[in-house]
Structures are given as C-alpha cells and as structure tokens.
Image (cartoon, rainbow, N blue to C red; front, side, top):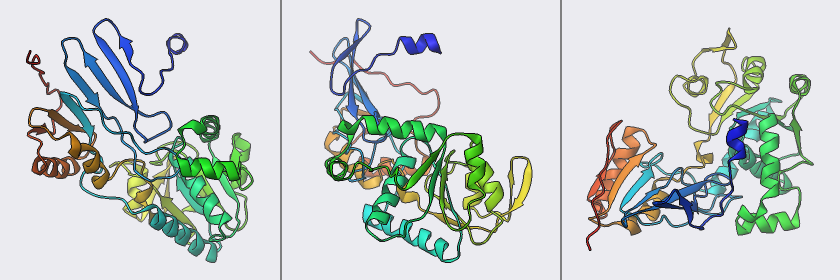
Length: 335
C-alpha cells in the first residue's frame, strides 16, 4: 500500500492526462463527494468513453453542482435513483429540524449513522445553519469518528471546491462545519464518555449502514430507550443492520447481543449525495443520439429500468442495463 501511494499523482479537473501511449484521460467534476470525478477517455483511433461514476445533486450545499457530462461513443452512467427524486433542500432542513425538535421534547438523543466523507459534513452543515438561524436550540453535537474528523479537515483545506453559496457563508463565518457547536471525538475513551451525556444530544458516527464502527456501540446503549431517535439518512443495503432498523424489526443483533428496538426510527433519504431522477434526465437528455451507446450501472434493476425507459422516449436507441460480464464493442469511426 505504501509503495502504491508513492506512485499517486494529483491531476486537476478538465486537464487532459496521458494514460500510456494510446489513451488520454480527462477528469470532470461530478459534484458527488469532495474530489469526485467523471472520467472521459479519448482512445487511439478516435473512439471515446465517458464513465459518470457517482453523480451529485444540483443545488445541494457545500460542493459545486456536477459539470455537464462529456459526450462519448460509449457512455456508462450510474442509475442509483433513476426512478425517483429527492425532496428539495428547504424541505430537507425542515424535516431534519422536526426530527430533532420532537426528540428534544422527550429528552431523547438523536443517533445518526453516517458515512465519514460527504454525508457527515452535510449533516453538520445543516445542523449548524438550523441552530444559527434559531430554528433549533443549541444542543451538544458529537461527531464520533476519527475518519470523519480527518475528512472534515480535508474539506476545510479545499474551499475552491465549494459552491458560491457555501463560499459566501464561509467568508461570513469561518465556523462553517461547526467547531463551536460540534465536538469531534477521536479516542476510544472520548467515544465511551458520550454515552454518559445526560439530556438531548446529536451523535453522528459511522458506518452509514450500521455494519461496523462506533455507531454500533451507541446503538447498543440507546435503541432500547423510546425517548431516543435513530435517524437514517442514506440508502441501507439488504441484509445490513441499517436495513433491519428501517424495517423496524422488533429485535436486532448488535455486537453479538440481541436488543429490543424501542427507539423511534426516522428515515430522511433525501440527504443522499446521488442525483435524483430529474437531475439524471437533465444531464443525460442533451446527449441523446441514435449512434451513441449507453449502458446503465450502479442501480437496482427497478431504478435502472425506469431511467432506461424514459431515456428511450427521449431519443436514446442503443441503451441497456448490462448483465454481469457483458461486453460492448465500439466500431471504428467513419473516415
């Protein structure tokens, strides 16, 4: 791993970079996570391929919106939310405030499983704005993850990736990610001490699907108390603890023990960093061309099928949701 990392080199967005002798790569801002990128490949012989990777959402706070998808002979696009949209940003903030306020009213704690990069910073941003605007009372907020703390520091180092609104907020308030409000815990002893906190607080910890990490310890100590809330803010894959919480199973297994689920489980999937249906259609529709090959990936079959059907209506012809191991052949361009 160390030897591999020594070979890594940073490449700016929108700058052609040779990959061997026959391929040139260009990275385009995907707006999904800090540093996320679409990959556009220009191949020897005039053929081209674009892989969108995970595409971000328009008008979400912190990061810039995704850039236009580079046209190519073969377009490989994600389809995570190809069949449904997310609520608007204002509704997200209001829904988050409602969950926190009703939990505070019963003197409970809010547990938020969140991935360390992206989702944690977004939640901290929303909480900071809600408290700063007086829509939520000031209360203790813990980000209990060494990785989240490190990732947040990386965010601070790259304000050039922020959108205009966030850049303006940062200019007015350097405490954008809430260090005055948030305690970032790193040590095990600090993590354990959180469970001794009396009164309401917010605990944000990884992992986002509750399969590992410190969130397991907080769930173990808190899901049996009906005053508390487990707030799910992202997709939970089948057969994960997060999915079982969303399904509100009466009992769940955590760290080898069985615990009754008596805490409220609230789900706000609108915090996803993935583009929704309308965002995907807005980005893909301008590329409609009967000659262009399109393959949809990274989506459950129903979501990919919904996106595929709409894109066909909008002029795409050679488009499919490929099977595992399926290949695509690009013909030589006409001279």
